[in-house]
Length: 171
Image 1 (cartoon, rainbow, N blue to C red):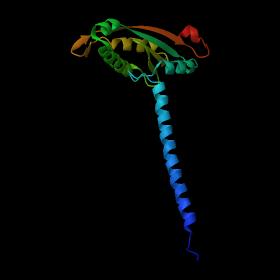
Image 2 (image 1 turned 30 degrees about the vertical axis):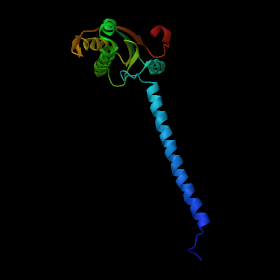
Image 3 (image 1 turned 45 degrees about the vertical axis):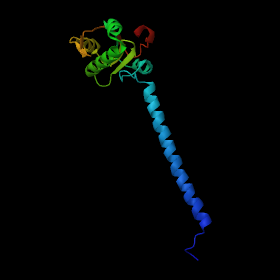
Image 4 (image 1 turned 90 degrees about the vertical axis):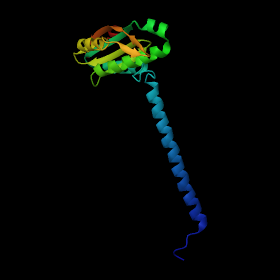
């Protein structure tokens, strides 16, 4: 009987195929979750910028290129946080991050290092101009919860030449 397949062969074969697809679905879901966890591990949840961990990792790579390291500290943020509350402070940090992102050139890294401190890795010779542009983004007030809030920023710049490998001095 050439067209006869015994059921004891067909049922286990289909069961094996079904279980294979089920296992593949679980593996894909696990990989997707792992990818999301890796992204979250290197992202500041408040601003969506890179976090300190990612900044340090990329800083090590940055040492092989010429460019500028910018460290930015918001002036006047603590009184806002103290008088208007942490919710307003969080919203303010988010808006500051959006303004800073607009100025940072493509291929550069902007990170929130913690509190009201940010860091940027700028390749090339435009570090000082970028620092001035970042400062200029805070020249007009923020409007949050019906209040007008003014901030300023202090920026430190250090330049790097490839091969110097002066990580401690650069920071």
